[in-house]
Amino acid sequence: MLCIYWADLKGLTKNYDEKLNTLHESRAEKVKNYKMPEDKIRGLGAGLLLEKALEDYLKVNGENPMVKDAQGRYCVSYEYGPQGKPYLKEYPNVQFSLSHSGMRAMVALSDTEVGLDVQQMCGYKDKIVKRFYHKNEQEVLFELTDDVQREKLFYDIWCCKEAYIKYTGQGMGQDLRDFYADFKSDDIVLASGEAVAKYKILQTEDDGYCQAVVFHKKITNIDKFIKILL
Image 1 (tube, helix red, strand yellow):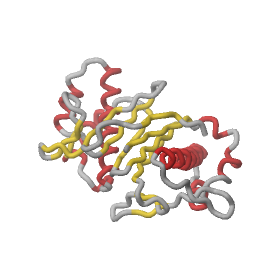
Image 2: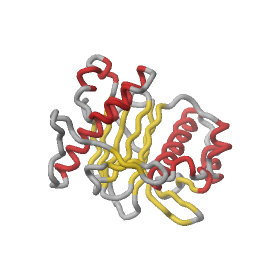
Image 3: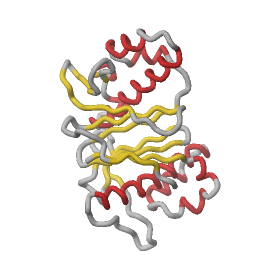
């Protein structure tokens, strides 16, 4: 099962303190340590979104409701894999991937490994393409002559690459040129000529952002993709 949830974070500037007090203590302390106001809003929004999304995901799956602490706050704390990939301590059977950029947050929840990334678009970057993109991805980009289409595809590919290294749990320790998202035919991620995962470019109600999810090959569809009000 694969469910994806996203949220607009702009409204959180009005009730930041009130919302922060509802977060699990460990997440709230992490948010407080951010220096920049924008990072605080993104951290708060990501935490709130994960809680609301997890509450819905557990309900859809017919599982027990979320655990709360003595103060009535949801218990959502983390453990980390060898490469730093986070896992939900209280919900070991739920895999998740959380991302935020600009004033948007997004989370994917699944019963198998999953990776998700969202990026606010801010221009095509040729140096990144030449340094980090697989030759197949470069070819697809360089075939485009329209600047708007090229910028969009640049971010679609980047989101897929970020989502894949979250999916594998290897992070930036993995060479981004060792795999590629196939944008010519099938929605698959390939490494050494072998299909290793699937990807999906996610479309939301407005533009200015790109987002992608990478998931196990056995998953045939996204079960839920909704916006949540925080």
